[in-house]
Each structure stands twice: as structure tokens, then as C-alpha cells.
Image 1 (cartoon, rainbow, N blue to C red):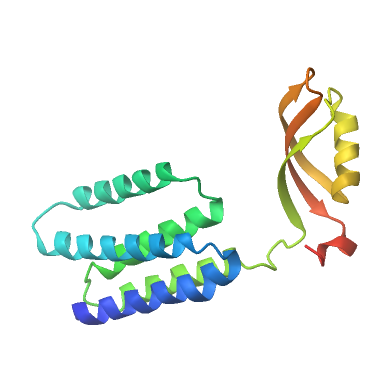
Image 2 (cartoon, helix red, strand yellow):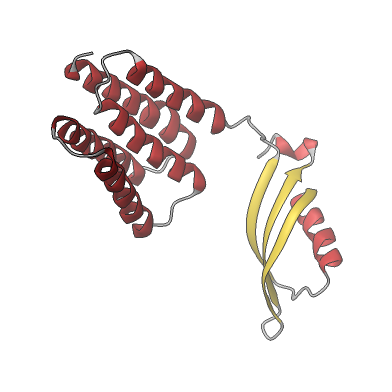
Length: 186
């Protein structure tokens, strides 16, 4: 497959990922430039490494370094990390010409995985919150009961991160399933 066609497939894939999947679902404008820039950068580096007589280890090492630099510079949610790595992978796949249709197929598989894995209807009743409560809970049973009332759902997991008896507060990470009558509002 020609290099130009691979670049075209990469461009179409990243445009679909950013404007049809990421932005409509998450709406974080500042991530658009990051997703495009990392994709284009990795695409260029992949083309360069594919033409040079260097090892795959160097390419994978570069992939890892780019990932670490970006992930340390700003806090990203798990979905944003998935989009970020997908953008990296699309650029890497687009920059390696394997003389077949495997690259476009892999790009399509990435887009399908994101479409399904980040679909708003997938586990729509499930929720996760980190909450700061204005009561210092030392009894987990009471905390669970109060959270179920507050969140109108069933607590699946809770992890107390901090109890402050002086300032009378509790910080808790809670995973829950919304009751069916409230899941439509979420």
C-alpha cells in the first residue's frame, strides 16, 4: 500500500475519532489539539523509523517516552487516556507500511473498540464519584446506607480515602449502580 494512502487512512481515522467520537461524548476542546498533534508526530516518527535501519525497540521506546511525557503533564481521565493511546496507535500503524490492508483494518478495529467501549449506553446505570461528605464516618455500614440514599442507587464498592474527625468530613471513592428510575436522568 502506498504511503500516501496510509496517511489518508490515518487522517480519516483520527478525524472520525476526534470529531465523531471524542468531542461529542466528552466535549474537552483542549484535548483536540493533543490528539491531533500526537497522532501527526507519531505518524512522522513512524515513517522516519520505517525508512531508517533502526530496531523496533527504539520505536517502541519512543512510543513509551511520548506517552509518559504527556501523561505526566496533565491529569487525564481513563477515557481520555484511551483516546490518547488510540491516537498514538493510529499514528504508529499509519506510519508502518506492511504492504497489505492490515493497517487500515487495524485502524478500523481501534475506532470500533472506542465506539463500543465508550458508548454512553454501555453500563449507563453505573457511576463513580469521589465525594467529600460533611460528616466524619467511622462506621462503614452507616456510610454505605447514607451514600445509597444520597446517590439513589446500590453501592457496589466504596473506599474511604480520608476521615477528618477535627473538621468533621469524610472523603470516599464510591462505585454504584443507579436505581432504574433515576438512570434516565444521568
